Structure formats: structure tokens, C-alpha cells
Image 1: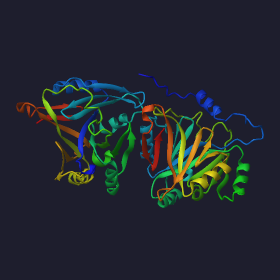
Image 2: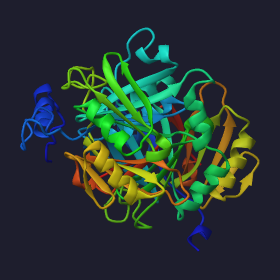
Image 3: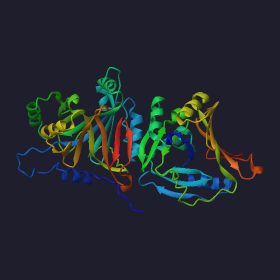
Image 4: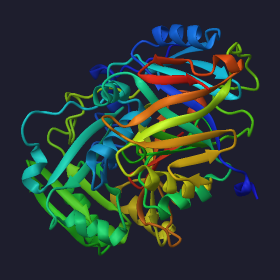
Length: 266
Length: 234
């Protein structure tokens, strides 16, 4: 039987990050701005443990250990569980109090779902200038725990696209390099996502322009990751699918629907 | 058209921290050779043994990775026991629509190795009820058609299961009947060649007993307690 290596050492993680441009010097010159990078996806649910158990099982991912005492996010009114798949963080959040804004989002959407695509920017001011040039409204522009956070209106982009200028830039939100995470047995990373909107071509063009991605039809590539914009067609809009790189070729084509998001093995 | 085909029970699953021991007891009681063993620890985190009794698959599973969810189930369940009943559906989308109409939460809703799988929350039904729309209608999990299985010398087939539930058994049976479009009588739901009896849990819920049709009628009445289940020859 072929042995499959599911280990992801810190060195491998750093190596992968470097290989995908995180630490690379831009080839076209020192002044060129590096493109945005997809670092993290957020799923929102009314039952975090139920969703986490499903994800852990489907991905063969050992559960993230829980610290004693309240979590970091509880002061902001929600529970959160972080997990890492390859170099990508997945966060599952659950509101604590009835008046939390996530409950309004559930009501508007009709249930649990994909809530956010979190990206890394290397120049927050330039990103804001491009957003202003496109007449885009920012729903957040703030320093949060020492990180510059910029968020775009989900009503425009289908889902919440939230950018951070991480400090330090090698270890983004959730602490993937040194956090208490294990490796998934079934998938090696999250390599893409699907966002349903009313006008995929226009939104893809704008996302490529403002977020510094490479457009190919309705797909926007950010290094070795992509976001596919698809037509909502009267269905749920927003973050509707995540693509996982399957470790076993036999699993390619399989999928699991969890928290209103289709986890697809590619 | 395919939705008119009745749902079939294809497969029962027992979970244990030591399937070698459970298998030895089953081999003795059912006079059946050891089944096919597979180590799927590297990817799926468990190992199993597949037996076949008549036309029904009989699977034993054992977690091999410390994070596997079966460990937690052992803790909640009080140890080894009956874990799952697996059905075949012929129209998964229609089945999903009925589940949604019943406002049931799915613990699995996925395509697994090319097979369309739906699983219900065991907190509702006492045990895991899982359905597959198999790609090959006669090639269900365990490959009963293509793989050679040893036969039991004492049992024709598995013909009934007892499931202890927290909610009123007749209410659960009625809901299972609606979901699977199967006839219900009191707290019993009938499927072709098999039935499930829902009982009020007096202690822990779950799959608590299996009935095997005896080849020799004189053997009917024999009972063995294996893997915290009553296995009865009837």
C-alpha cells in the first residue's frame, strides 16, 4: 500500500508560503505591489461544535485543542474555532448573544453558511486607494489587534472580503505557523473557493482590479489560490464552496455539504 | 421512477475498540469465517472487518487514530456497541427533500468515494441511520457482488433490529416511515426482508439487538451478548 505523507512540518509550511510568493521579492521590481493572498475562510453557524465535528471527520483532521477559559473572540460576542488545512486557516464562528450581527445575517440568508474570505494585503493604503477609485464602500477600515483590517461590503461582492496587512506578514490570523494545529489526512490544502453573485463577470473583473488578482473568465487567481465567481441563479449568494486538494486521487470529485458550504475534493 | 423502489437495509455496523475479539465471538456464534479486514487508518483513521450474512453486510469498525470520533462515541455510549444501520436509496435528492421537510439535521451530506451519502443525527434516531445512493445498484458498500464472503452455517440473514430511542418510539417510527416511505405498524418500520423496532430507551439509546433467521429451526431462541448487543437466532 502506498504510504501517504500527511505531515506538514513548520519548515514545509514556511517553504510553501515562500514558494507561493509570501516571502518572495517581486520579479518585476521592488516597487511592484504584491497581489492579495487568500489566507483564511470563515463559516458562520448557530452550532459551532456540530459543524466542527463534521469538518474534522470529513477532512480526517484532528480537532484543534481548546484552551481553558474564554476564547479570544468571546469579548466580541462570538465563539470561534480555528483549524488549519495546509497553509490555509478555516474558522467556524457562532454568535453568543441574540443581538449579535451574525444572527441578522442568518435571518437574511436563511441559515448557516460561508461568511467570509480573508485575504492578506501588503499595502493597505494602496488597496484603499484602488477601492476608492472604483467607488467601493468599505464596511471596516480599522486597526484590530495591531493589524490593519479593511473589509468590503458583502452586498456588493457576495461575501465578506476582508483584508489584513499582517504584522508580521509571515504569520497571519490564527497563527498558522506556530498554532496547535494538526494536519488533515484527507486534504493537503484549500486551493480555491466559489462565490455566488448576480454578475460574475463584472465582479471578477473588479476583484482582480482592486485585490490585485489575475482574471481568467470569472475566475480570479491569487497566486496558487483562486476564487471562482458564479451566478447565484436565485440560490444562496455568497461563499458557497471550498475546493480542497485531495491527498488520494480516488477522492477527487467527492464532496460534503457542511454549514451550507460545499466542500469539494479536487 | 426509481423513487418507487423501496428503500433497502443493506448493512449493519458495530463499533468496538477491539474488533478482533468481537469478530472471534461472532465467528463462534454465527459459525461464519472471519471476514475481510482493511486498515484505513492512514486516511480514514479506522480499520474494519466486513462479513456478509445472507444478503446483508455486517461490518465491525475500530478506530486506530487517537482523534477518531469513535473514541468519543465510546465515551458517550458507555463502550462498544451497535453503531449504524445503512440503507440504500434510489433517489437521494428526493430523500433530501423529505429530510428537509421533516426539518432534520444531517450529520453527513456528501459524495463519498463516488457514492451519495446522507446520515441523520443519532441524537434523533437513537443510532446512526445512513443512506447511500450507490453508483452500482447491486454493488453496495463492501462489494457483496464482486467479493467472495464466507457463509454462516447457522443464519440465513439478518432480519430485524431493535433501536432504543429517547423520544416516543411510535413518533420515531412514524417519521422513519415517512422518510423511507416504508410501512409502519406501531413502533415497527418494515423494509423488504427486514424490520426495525423502535423501543423506549431505559438507559442508553442505540442499536441494541439484531435478529438472525436461523437455518435450523431448532436453533431458534439462542441468544448471545456480543459487543453490547443481543444477537438472537429466531
